[in-house]
Length: 124
Image 1 (cartoon, rainbow, N blue to C red):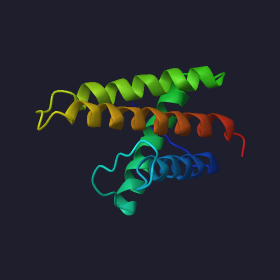
Image 2 (cartoon, helix red, strand yellow):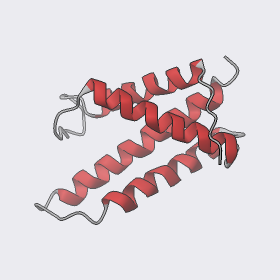
Image 3 (cartoon, rainbow, N blue to C red):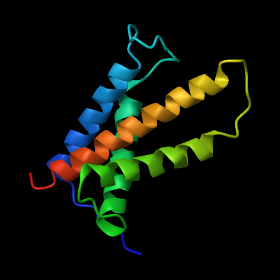
Image 4 (cartoon, one colour):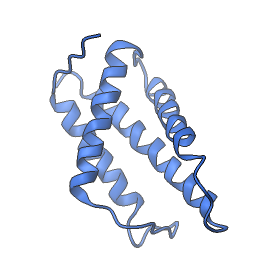
């Protein structure tokens, strides 16, 4: 299988929007009161870019997006993949599941923003 990814402005916008969602999600003064660890901008941008490349590959080869609902459904599958990969880890305290669920919701929202940006800005 040959993988060809053509970089475009939609990919840059997707990375920036995903990082904006992450920045707001893990802000110190967020209304939900969760501050879980520290985030490093460089590694976050690299991981966001890698996820955008993978989602773009899925969209171009396996999953066509026609509406925002298609983007949401793909995002749910990406979040479920994260959920299944990270779920079997050990529980350290009573709040482990809520923290894990909070992270899974973050992955869902970041993946949705990426899918939406790749769909909406594909012609730019």
